[in-house]
Length: 389
Ligand SMILES: *Cc1c(COP(=O)(O)O)cnc(C)c1O
Picture 1 (cartoon, rainbow, N blue to C red):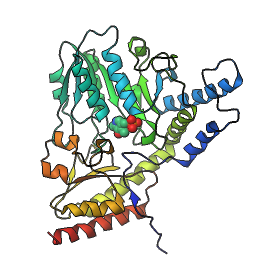
Picture 2: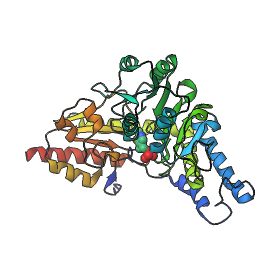
Picture 3: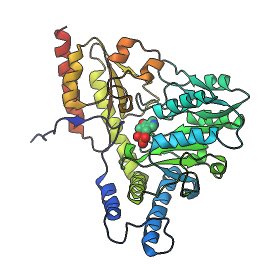
Picture 4: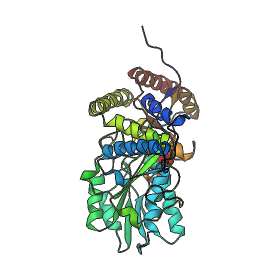
């Protein structure tokens, strides 16, 4: 018998992922009123010790995931805060006299708008434009370095088009020029192995809700002792080694720890990667030959689970119709629904392409039946909406 498919189907994993039930289970214990509700900063009794122990375990799970030390992990409210803390924290560092930052024009808004803010405060920022395929030319970074450049901030996987930047190469350039390197790796975690032992990265941001954890918790990795010279955004009780104050949200942190542990299970991870690649190939191969369909972003240096599709010359109502059944997004969710994608624009694509593109993204709970359904649905509808033109 054919499996029934529940509609609409969620194809917006790049904006947020469903929480893994195992993660939910781990968090629930810390949301009750039994002995596990304590404040991890309460050092004088066992309610506090229980919470502290849970946070220690989670810190280990996160540190293991990216192969760093536990004292390099700082919990935040998400990648937006981590990006703000990394960039402003270094800009306002007490021993920073330099004023120039290099980033790209396809970063997440939490990086771009932080940089725009700093420009108003007297800093200078170079926004590197990518090539037409969304990749950043390393030569452009080299060319942009000035005497007073103190930071390069470049994302690894782009959230709208899925392209993967050459973070290793950029790290080398930064090291050679004594410039700090921050990476927004929010879309990398859970997609492939992220091993910081092999890379010259000083700061790295990511967020639990992009890898099957809860919303409202993230991490800033800060290379050993670099936090000592950074300026916090939030002052207070000094939790998180004086860099980020506020009572630690035990249940959220337990959630990001569990989500990290799940993707660490090697066998599961490699099988999951194969499964998602297969889904990508099914969709891609079946729709690539349809008239007027094209793909945005490099097709090789790309994560398989994010596909940015341009439906050229279809009626506007096409989008309304297909989005009722397939929950995709225009550009990124953070660009508040119908605002034009700054990423596609920065790639130099014309307005018509920018306005006719949708991001299709999937993940752990997507099934092959759903991919097949989506493929057929797109094929059928696109033919219908061209005919009517
Ligand atoms: C989602 C996302 C963010 C923001 O993360 P939040 O935890 O929602 O603040 C930052 N950068 C990238 C690349 C993202 O995909």
